[in-house]
Length: 52
Image 1 (cartoon, rainbow, N blue to C red):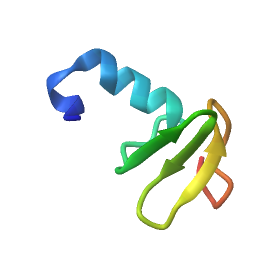
Image 2 (spheres, rainbow, N blue to C red):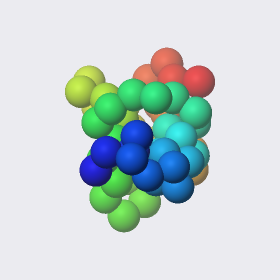
Image 3 (tube, rainbow, N blue to C red):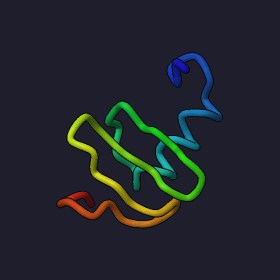
């Protein structure tokens, strides 16, 4: 999905990533994986590997 074309989806992505604009963002249930190195958090949580 292209979040540049859908402002609501961009807001959702930013909420899931703690404000980070990094892709890919993969959501599997409550698990959120951000970026190619696989930083993982629970939905709405803080990324585990050095994220802010």
